[in-house]
Image 1 (spheres, chains in turn red, purple):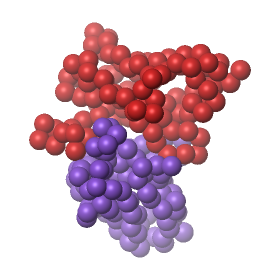
Image 2 (cartoon, each protein chain N blue to C red):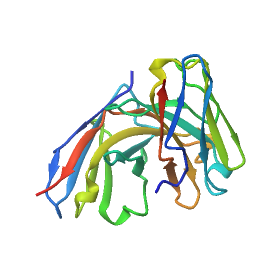
Image 3 (cartoon, helix red, strand yellow):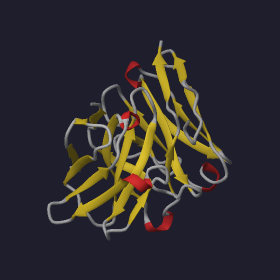
Image 4 (cartoon, one colour):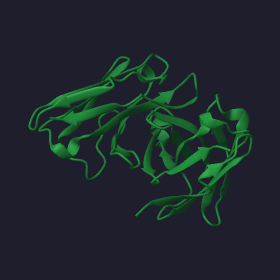
Length: 124
Length: 110
């Protein structure tokens, strides 16, 4: 079955760069949108961005200046880099598989598989 | 503040039918499908309903959803104690050009 697994440091210093990787198994990379979503403590879900299997990216405008998502189809895995982090970036970060069929895209875009999430704390 | 508006809490007794609402605008719910996610404490969200009313394999028929205009709702019939969780609605937002979520509704089974 489809499995996603995040890896990366759980503690990042303020002003530094947060780096996370998501390993994918049980799924083809093609035809999906490989995504990052975060959830601040006690808060709701916030979409960070995604990378399509073609390499095309789309980021949340509120984070776009600080975020880069890349894809390594050979492993396969995809990564998140978020620069200049502050305490406000402390959250559980999820990688997820996004999908929409050709007949319902993007209006039918949804997340069908999620990793278990990793807590990233920004603190000195 | 989340783009989509959900009540922070909902409750019901076992066997009861409960509904959770999700309100948006013409740039998101009004023009796109709505999806629902279930999240237990300390775990990842799980897809519960997609494209406004479709259930993934394995999701009981007790869970249903609908959409009308710029609002959507999730209904849970025959409420069970194991349904106690947080529920999030999500959709695509044409203005943001990306997916958005509601703030989540904590369902308590009394």
